Image 1 (cartoon, rainbow, N blue to C red):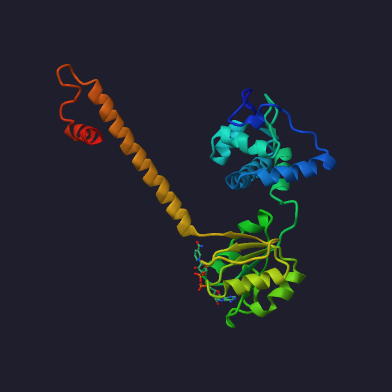
Image 2 (cartoon, rainbow, N blue to C red):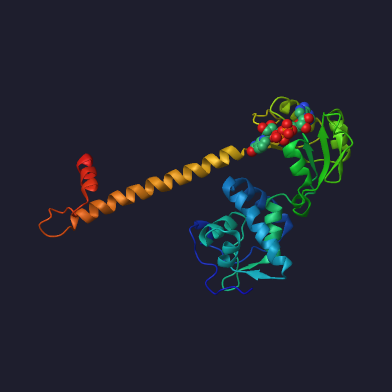
Length: 284
Ligand SMILES: NC(=O)c1ccc[n+]([C@@H]2O[C@H](COP(=O)([O-])OP(=O)(O)OC[C@H]3O[C@@H](n4cnc5c(N)ncnc54)[C@H](O)[C@@H]3O)[C@@H](O)[C@H]2O)c1
């Protein structure tokens, strides 16, 4: 894949104005600066960085060495101005006429997302959701191997799911410590989720992905993300409703505009557009 000449232009970010080339990799200076930048990255941009990483990994698999922002934006399904802005948060501006070096950008995003650290995942609650998560083959290839499963149902203990035998919840601290689990996925009912969380933390887990419909209390050094598909659907619903409102407002506006340029003698009203005229009267 080749880069287009117009790749690295000012998008929407002031940060893009000063530099056009990749900062030199100097660990002594680069690491604290990168940490500082990572703190300032908006949450939504962090989520998109993960999407760029997936697209970049696909390009690397095809031996693509450079990519333009337009090409990467298409591959990631975002607009290229947003992509350039997001990459500016991690100090990556690409090179004019060349674009971004795929391997360098992968390294930068991985460092920013903390993926250079080895992760190991435990899933707790091997019911419908836990089974699906444990059987999903996509986590190991993205750097998140599942290494432990826990439940309290005696029928499940010792049964392999996705190749890993389910351990009893009472062994959670010991097993998590031994297997150096860093991410705990809670897929138990709400009741009991806090206790599961506390036990994961006691086993050294510092990242919790919580599917249970409950707000968890954790120490300051522990990061929690709550996954709620109903919330995602509500957000989708909000966007659709907003689009419909915008479309209705536009239709109203064009009715008003149409009324202004109506045929001579019509008093500005397009014949038959009684409903729009009524709305105009309401507005007055
Ligand atoms: N966030 C979402 O979008 C979403 C979607 C689906 C389900 N969920 C939630 O995920 C959770 C699991 O749903 P499910 O359909 O898989 O339920 P499920 O009843 O099929 O499975 C729950 C499992 O947890 C085990 N369990 C119960 N208490 C436990 C404890 N203290 N320690 C260890 N294991 C325990 C049970 O034995 C069972 O195997 C529920 O809280 C549900 O509300 C969330």
